[in-house]
Image (tube, rainbow, N blue to C red; front, top):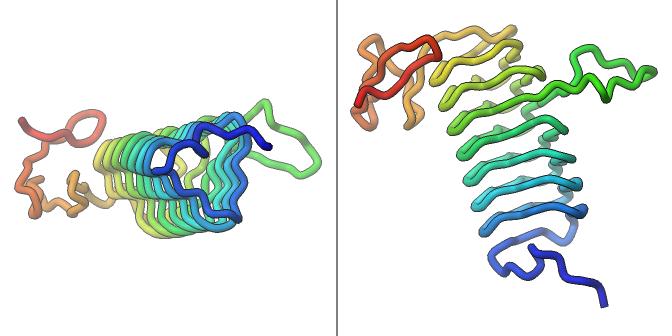
Length: 196
């Protein structure tokens, strides 16, 4: 009889039978992992996470609580998603700046931090070594090759800031007031922050 894993004992965790989960890994409560995905060892996945089909996560990756990782995404070593991050279908993360098939550069991996509440659109590319600020919004197909301020709306190739987004995901007008929640924001050196 095989030994039960911690997530096997947790009835709130759903792992589709076509998935592989390597040990050691941690999978939080109410997390769902769908068809043909692979969780590599030393990966920490939080509570209430949804991982779509055909994803590869790890090794040594941290995924916070309440993240949504859509289909066809690889989160490589060095990627950290804080709580509430949305990764749109087929978005891409890199981990080496100048890869060559014939040259091993595993000692040159660069970390990527995606802060709380970030949204990354479908088919966007996140070049390694940068930080995506809290509640920023990366447009579909954008290529991010710089640090992104909090609440920035980024679009294009290479991605540039074209506006600001609220916590609720609304594009802000010049008054920096959210049309959904009514919250007001102000600019800082790190991006926007909510006015208390």
